Image (cartoon, rainbow, N blue to C red; front, side, top):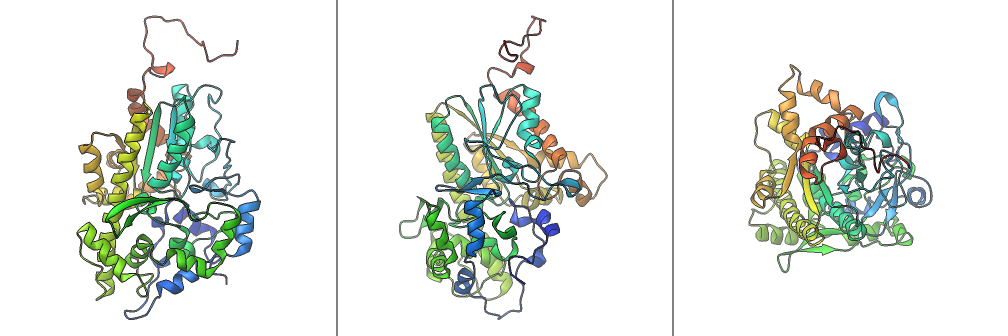
Length: 434
């Protein structure tokens, strides 16, 4: 059986396009101590079948090629919704997800992020942006895309906000392992063994612009996409191209080491230099568990430093454009579930950074924790209320009304539905056709 076809549809919803971390552990590589798992071989095996690229580049599919951020939303109906339904996932000419609620009005709120911004596994009218727009009486644009990291969302934000003169409020949503994704050169190479492209109709994660550490200077650098044309996408079908362009991708190596998916032929010198720059111990190859834990620590620190850099740049840009920035965070797997168990969140360093810099911030992990405490449910039962991998329509509705007060407080002037006045007349100026 083809290695890309063995994952069936029921696993797709457990995994989700935006969150590979939701995969059950048994799908990650497991073998006895001492078995050699070559990084070089892994990279060469990541070459994409040409027929899948043909579908991605030439037919309606879930994603479409973008020369800067790799891909953006396309037009497709994935079979991934509630009750075994298909979902309508479509895009407008300006690249945002199709919206209809007050879409003829000027839009002052643009949203960026990964699949929890894009709202994967629901139809266009079931996103949290559409639910919230209906309540506030004004549109909210959705420029999220499944699989993006913080950096790719930031690059899309830059491109859009430079030309959008109506938007004054910018939301950057960080989810799950978005910190790590920012640094990958090609996220596809991190998950190709356990993802079903459905023949190319769900292909994504190709090369994109990213941020990474220059191990010679010890500075983070922003990198342009190594594949910036549709024609060059076919290079991804060449095993040697994949190897030569990813052999020194330190974040990809750390990610794979942290799950024991590779354990040899890595760039040990580069990894050691990175550890020295970040002032952490080197990856310890003396045992599988030590390798995994030391690689995880280095992976997280690397991703945190990249995220701090991105957030500073985003804040500086928004201030220069006279726009306001709101950061949103939610991680149902690595943060929320740990908080439920009374453990410290692993990314507390990022939260401390956000608070120290005084950024506007909304933490959905805290909302879900408080909501969970209201029920006499197991954690799995609670998750089933709102999730099928990503949010269900009711999950998006819950999120919309959870963030509502923060948005209303943020906006000036207030949305029409929150403008308080002694004038009791119903005023529809600007809302009804003349």
